View 1 (cartoon, rainbow, N blue to C red):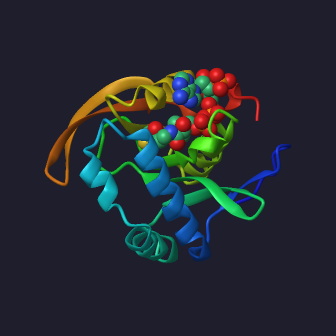
View 2: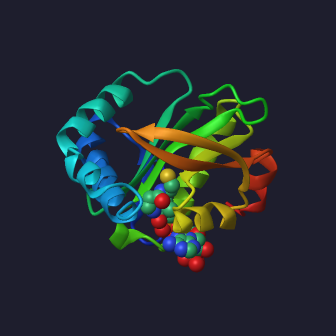
Length: 186
Ligand SMILES: CC(C)(COP(=O)(O)OP(=O)(O)OC[C@H]1O[C@@H](n2cnc3c(N)ncnc32)[C@H](O)[C@@H]1OP(=O)(O)O)[C@@H](O)C(=O)NCCC(=O)NCCS
């Protein structure tokens, strides 16, 4: 995988196990900001960067086949990340999936999320996965606006249970990533 250096000094590059702590910090901080009001405050308060980092380190060190992690780094600090790989439920249309995508609140709306999606799509295509699904909380309207802007179609629904709470999710799908990527002028 190649890294690419955008003009704003944000480097998009594959993650290494050493990035686990920084990724976990972004994950927890962004969850707390984005999901306040959507997920109960006690659940958000219980999130632990340390525990999260352990799991992420393990997953980066021993990646399941076809899985990937991209990070966005600015001045040596992780400010965003994306992880993905094969679609996890055996969907009949969508073969690839972005499992998680987070950009620190103070770095949002600067194109970093889009760059992470582009890097992820390139990896999926390289791995022979030319369609993609991304799940987003139904009430996460900014997240849904982001995926809609990138051309995703809201085609799937599911209810997940997170620490005993039922949450509705919408799956955004891209059926032809190769054509989509060509249309993005990268
Ligand atoms: C969703 C997220 C990854 C987007 O990353 P980002 O770096 O802010 O996105 P970009 O700057 O590339 O945005 C591209 C376009 O998407 C749309 N968009 C992005 N954030 C938006 C928002 N909050 N509200 C409305 N539209 C939005 C806009 O059209 C934007 O273009 P513009 O800024 O020129 O108007 C980021 O906001 C985030 O981490 N959110 C919290 C967690 C989350 O919702 N993750 C995704 C679901 S799992």
